[in-house]
Each structure stands twice: as structure tokens, then as C-alpha cells.
Length: 299
Image 1 (tube, rainbow, N blue to C red):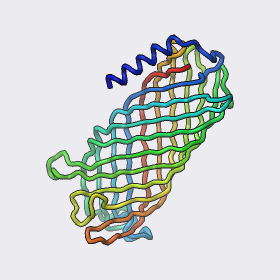
Image 2 (tube, rainbow, N blue to C red):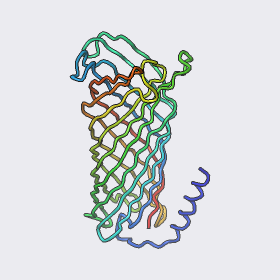
Image 3 (cartoon, rainbow, N blue to C red):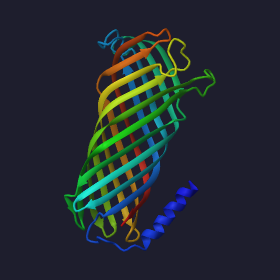
């Protein structure tokens, strides 16, 4: 962390002494954004009793609530040639708290529960990356509009642990991947002098894969007890206020919201006997938000 701060300070000093190349444009030729803040999200999925989605239609359901921690964000935008722009971004959340509920049912529509368990998730992480190319439609002293297309990935490393001491060996895990192309639109609007409003909306079309390890259930294989496969999509919406303190440095605060989900998919359960059982994955749902603050360095 100390090295990271030193590098940021060095960049700030360099940029502070670099003249503005395109003062008439609200978005500069090269921009680097660094930010951190808090993040919270909910995540859940369920499976049916068989591959037809019956017997019952919801057999088992896992819900992670209030998965929270500190996030770190970095993004770079470069108007590489004429109106063509390149973009890349990375985000990471270090999970420090969260609750998990595990429910099994015997009847349709979540009736006749047969098991319930409440656990915690105080470790793990989530991360995302994206890269794409865009075309600058507008970029003047008041307004900018740039659509992008590209490819990105999201990773979730989640856990089930018991902090009460009732199951001291519990360390079950669920690792999920969302990967696919996206389209994105970014925009900036000058409000007053050095103050501007920045926003973007992204639509992602993803392939979803995941694997879980129920480490205390001897009837299942380890370290892979089951796998999930489905197709889904995600929507991200971000808004920020940025205030320029010098020609090349701006401070910003922002709010980011995201909502991801899949359709029906496949659940494959790997038994210790070597048998593989297949049933329907009813869907995967993920939503959350970030509150961030940081710095924008530009040339």
C-alpha cells in the first residue's frame, strides 16, 4: 500500500507540471482514474429437484446477504487516434462481512422446509475487469459522449463459515465466473467551472460458470462438489461528480449500481460414489452498489 501511495504521488507531481493538450475538450486525451470506497452486494441461487424443474420446483436455495468490504477501482481511457478511444478498468472487493442462509424444501414454491442453516462469510473477494474500444461522438468544452464495445469478466470467491463454534471445520466455498462481451456508453456534462457530472451505463452478455465445495458433506466429492452453468446478463450504472483542482488533477465522488442475473441452467452434483446427478439451476441473481471517492489524472 505504501508503494502504491508513492507511485500515485509521483504521478500527481508529473501531471501537475504537464500542460493541457486539449483545453477545449471536457474529456482529455488520456485519463487515469483511481478510487476506493465501500461495496455491498446480495447474491443467491436455487436448484430444482430434477432437470425438468420439478419435484419440487425449488429444492435448495443459497442466499448471501450484505457481502461487504472495501473496494479498489482503477480505469484508464485513451483517445488513441482521431475519434477512436480505448478503455480498460479493474475493480476488486475484499470481503470482510456477510451472512449466508441455506434452505431446503420438500414442496413446490418454497413450502414444507426440511432444512435451514444460517452462516457467515467474512472472507473471500470479488473482482472484475473490462477492456474495449469506442468512438468519440461528442467531446467539446461542455459535453462528451463515447460509446464502447468490448469484453469483460467478473469473479466471485465466496464462502460459508460458522462463527458460532457449532461447526468449527466449516469452510465451504462457491467460486463463480461471469465472462462475455459488453456495450458501454460514457458521458460528461460541465456543471460549473471545474465541476462536471460523469456517468456511464454498461450492458453485459455473459456465460456463467461456477463450482462449489461443501467441505463437511462426505457424500459429495471434494474439492468440487457441484458445478453450475447458465447464460446471463448484467447492467452497471455509474455516476460521479468531479472537481478539477488543477489543470490535470480532479477529485471525484461517485455511486455505482449493478444488477446481474441468469436464466435457467444446469446443476451437476458429484457424489463420492462417482455418480453424477443433474438437475435444473433455477437462476442466479446478483445486485449491489459502491460508494467511492478518488482522483482523476489527465493529460
